[in-house]
Image 1 (cartoon, rainbow, N blue to C red):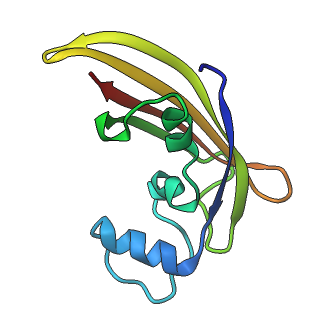
Image 2 (cartoon, rainbow, N blue to C red):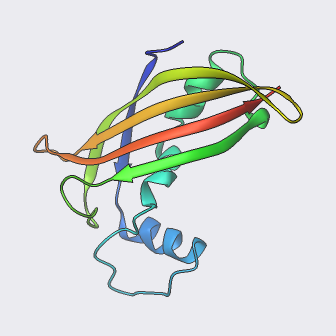
Length: 131
């Protein structure tokens, strides 16, 4: 399971950025130029890369909770029009015991680059699998 990879893409499209801004309570902007800092959280909208790694392993997605998200932008903010590609990699799984029983923490690395190959965004995500 560790090391599983899936291709990933993220199109920073004006309409999706506007929808995301509204969903997170940001004011309407008719000429939005940059994506909000948390926009990469929407990567699953463009293809279920993370979910497919889990479901291919028989994990009930109804038992998965968001854990943490760390997003960095080595090349500055994402711009409307960016077409990013890269991959999602399962980097680790930890077993823990929570108040209601056993938990697994699945950790993912998501790195997406611009067409010229420069790294645009790096996401480190953990998901909690209950039960």
